[in-house]
Image (cartoon, rainbow, N blue to C red; front, side, top):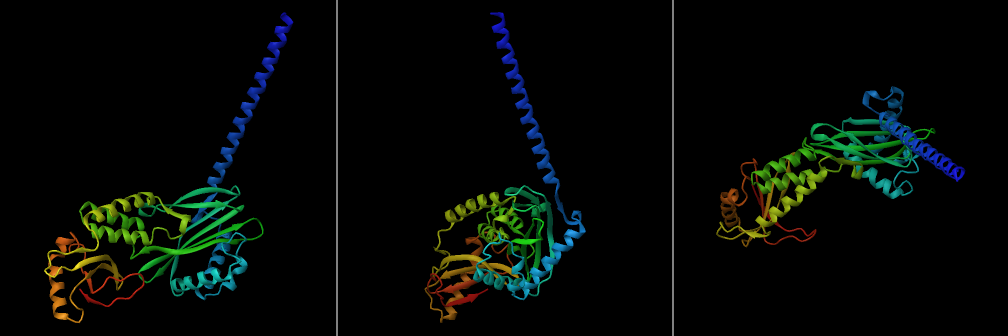
Length: 344
């Protein structure tokens, strides 16, 4: 009986030792995996941290891409496209993208917003890369597909705005190839999406709903300069605020609505930011029963509107140097062009 018990105890001891060994193995596996992941984090180099030889190679490629965009000549760089490049085999799509980009970069100065070199990442994995500072903090959603990757974020001046060109390269030891290219508006009149959001919030807190709406409209025009790859840290907050503001405006103004303070009863049906000489002003479009050829009556009606517009839209005269108006005899639908008479 004692021998049987001893045999059983030995088996249990052996089993426990195996269990301890397995646990120790798993612990070591996790430890070295974390070390490896930490090493990957450390392999992200930015700006001047990047080896000069790597920067020189990629910047030369950037110059080739920019030259091809300026000259609308995709054939000059198509050999640089990797197998992963979106629409590589769709020549019509490539031609269309280059043609559109040409007007933004043809005569524009540019500078580097970010340069990031990533060495030996896990292939077929995903990572978020924090970047930017202060009001420009954002995240880059990167999918690792090469042993080495390089991200160039390049800003171009386009009249009063700035365009972001995103170039992502990969290298598996056979040379750098372009995986992704995109361009989009990142700054409007010197402000980015987060700065316009902050303006909109400030207007909203004061009860200036129209100016809040116009500021948020400009925010949404530049919130995604590189599609899903680029995301401001405050993006979810901005979208949540957008719903709150839309609800407040819909409760306050049921478009079209009659301006009851004006004897002729014009109906406002649209208010939006209107760009003039590099600045944005409110454009108020309204429906009038007065014929457009009857200038004297139209002018008298518009004078009445301007006298009460601050009462109708609180803050609008305080926050804007100019307000534009368009009187119409019918509300335009779709792409239909409708005659109007304009006032300032």
